[in-house]
Image (tube, rainbow, N blue to C red; front, top):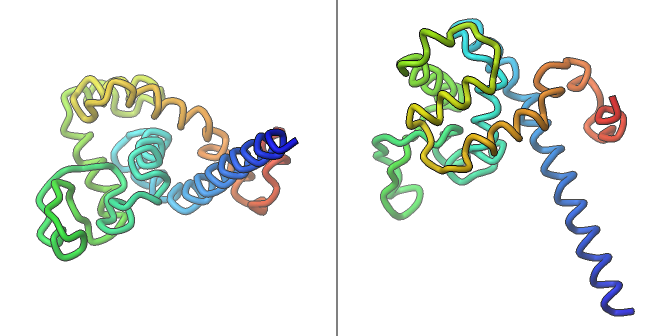
Length: 176
């Protein structure tokens, strides 16, 4: 009986954690979708790619790097305030705002060799594969993780109705 209670507790805790993560990611998408859409207009990089990389690299804005340095893309660079904020040096760039981080990501992508061929192409899978091949990310599982993130939240990236519903209506919006 005790092991059954423990098992049920673990299941409920896991389910709650998954729902919270989905809810907070949807909130993140809701908050930054307009910024990603406007950057798509300027740079011709699909907003799904911009948001997918940001969600993956920043834990939907919850990582220490995202919170303390406004760095939502894991971009490395000089950081004069790291010792003050963290107590040690950091190789990650600090931004004045989250929007600055988003713009800088797009500027970096626009300087990649593949950019001129993909500019305006809406196939996010090709973009993510090209980013990985260009050296943006070195982890072998980076590409499939980012693609899974985009696939999982694609409806929220592209369906404005998903943003107008209350956050508690998870089952209704996921049933579509």
